Amino acid sequence: MTIYYTLTFGILVTEMIIFCILVLPLPSHWRRAMLKFASTSPVVGKALHVLKIIFAFIFVLFIDTINRLQRIDSVEVDGEQRQHYDYSFEANNKAKKFYAQRNLYLTGFTLFLSLILERTSTLVFQVLKREEELESLKKETNSTTEGHQQFIDKEESYKKEITALNSELKQLKQQDRDFETLKKQVEQQSIEYNRLADERNDLERTATGQKTEVKKDI
Image (cartoon, rainbow, N blue to C red; front, side, top):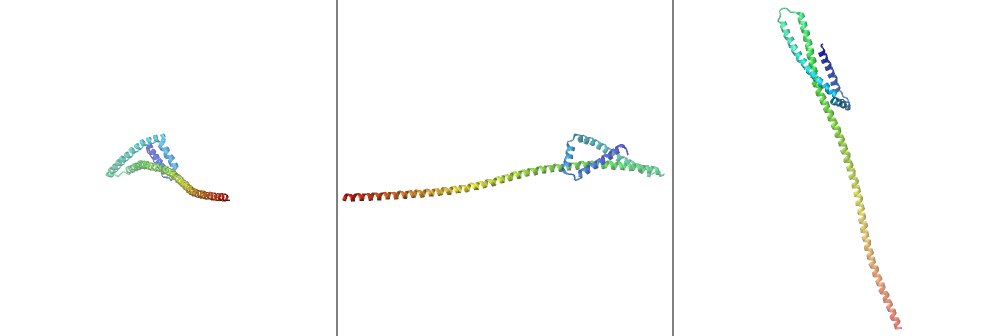
């Protein structure tokens, strides 16, 4: 295996490891930390840029492998048309075909897995982003619920205070009515007292006048 196919195999293994890490049921904060590092790190950005160039080179290898397989198939057809069958030529041709097919599968799976890996990482990042939004919405909902509960508690306390004030107001009104009733009773008693006092004075004056007349007669 040449060096560039060895590097392609290494990239394929690395993609498989990264894909397994993405699909593993890791805790959300671990995933969030890894994806945050991958999305904000300048080193990762440069590595992704280099990987795009490498994948373009792997795509060229993929096309070259397809062309090589077509050439091998055409040579194999020409060999079958020969009158003298050459076993060494057939073995060499099958070996070339085997290596070409291996390289085709290697480059093809590497390109295919790169597409799947990119899509999977995008979906995982979106899921984590939605989870963060959901957590923030839950916090806002909890704070709103607490504020609403505080408002209800204040409303209940105000209602209790209003009820207490209304009862005090009723008591004051009752006391005011009792005071008015007592005032009327005092006025009536005062009038009655003045009337009785006037009658008493009249009786005293009448009695004094009778005594005076009796003395004059004597």
